[in-house]
Image (cartoon, rainbow, N blue to C red; front, side, top):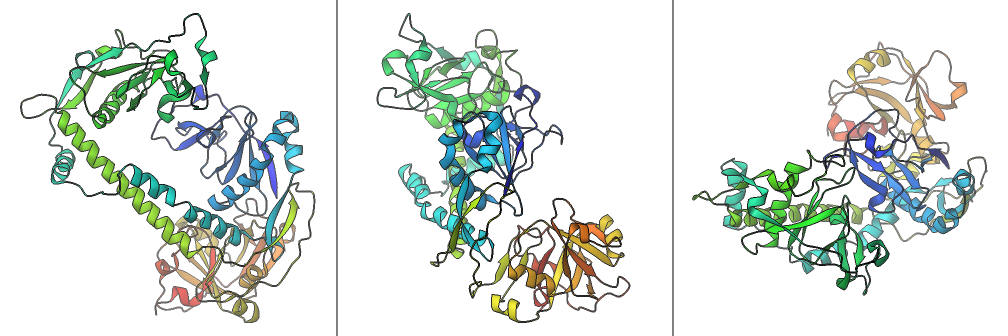
Amino acid sequence: MFCVESNPQLNQESFFFSENAEYPYFTRTVNNNGILGYVEYLDKEHLIKGDSIAVGMLGMQFFYMGHDFYAGQFTKTIFAKGFTLNSQLGLFFISLFNQYQEELKSVLVRDFEEKFLSLEIELPIRCNQIDSDYIEKYVNGLIVDNIFLINSFLDTHSLTDCTLTATEEAALQQLLRDEVTWKPVPMNTVFTPLKASYQRKGTRRQDHVSRIRTKEFCLPVICAKRGNNGIMKFGRREDFTAHSNVLSIIYNGAIAAGLVYAHEEDVGIFTDSYLIKWKDEDIPFDVNLFLKTAIQKKIYPIYSREQKATWQNRVENEEIYLPTDSNGEIDVEFMQTIVHAEKKMAVRKVIAYKNDIVKEVTANRAQAIKPHCTTIPLHPSLTYNPVEFEPMMAAEDIFIEGSVPVDLPKTERSQLLDEKLSLVLMYVIGPKARKKTEVVGKIALGIKEEFLSKEQVAAYKSIKYLMFHYWSNPRAYLLTKEPTLVNKDSVPSDYLLRMEKDAVKFLLLDYNPRQAADLDNLNILKTQRRGEIRYLPFVTTLDSILDE
């Protein structure tokens, strides 16, 4: 079911970290999904494929990685064999694997693969293969059941009203139309550094903090940390000088130097950072959120571990740009209004996202029928023989995921198994590849799944047409033979291999490239109703590509 691979690894110094970067950098940490930060593209050699499960050898906690990523030392990646992970399946499997966290911590790194692959997990099985459809619906149901946490947060923080006031709307429009007047302001003219000393003299501060917040260790203290507002540890209130409604600046760290955080509640300083506050008045916390962004935009790109972002003679002399009013004075009220408006805009997106999840997942909530379960070893060399039973009747459309998905609107499983349907294999293919592929007349299309359900096999054998397209200019061909499934070593030499990577089977498709099928009123976009498969070859009904 799975294989384990050691990750191609580079130290974090090899990467450029950025808030807007695309690729996660996975490390041994158990926080933030194991992600230390996000990095720019480096090279293919060290890039690890997503839709996999990553684990660090220190914390031994498993994380689903949906995106391609880079990794640090002492990490490994687990890849599925014979099926493809997605977010629901990934979450399901890591919940099973993490149950063995303490057991795996006791083994040596060199023995991890052998120990992991000897584990056995219980999975739902249908038609002699993993019932991924049930798993996805089950996980989606859990998501819906926990949506109330988002609602609770929004209610607690009075974030349910997203209506912009006239003042907020005007401020946003002013910003969007670039009608704001900005002026450069030296940091030392508007901010003052604060004393935030460690009070327990003669002791090491690292001996008097905790990674877990408790009644005793209740004061957040700032470190050279990226994320979580710079908070990695908690101290006793009597041990650290605390301040509230302030900004912290991280002056040291490979990826943290120059980061700025805003703190509404009391915080202290642990290491590699300092606190500053607005000089002239007590400003609202929302203004500090604005200032945090303005400062970080200026100093983060120019400071580093080699050029530390210390206050004296460095950051204090930097100029940041702030908005001004009609009198040329710094417009504190405008900064607060903009942040209020941006908060409401952000909450709108959260509520819309939550509602979309509820709508989508509720429609696919798991049925009350409990699937057959069997215990399956993870080791690929071991075999298993789960009890096979007849597929259940379904009133819903048939949709079976895979490297060549099956998407049959208004079709019951009994129809697919008992009748000879006229199905179409939709093949989206780029113009250059299409020129070579379309004229060959014989294609062997790779399939990654080792075990195929009866429905999948029936769908593949019911294909009557092969259609090439790239969102336009579709052309269909009537197959001259019933499609057949063969192993890789049984593919005839005159067939053109397509989707060959990781394929364990091949679907043989024969057609006459000189005689296109006469199908009128083709509507390609109508068939692309499922965004996750629109770039894959997939099987669908003939009716779904014809205008009614």
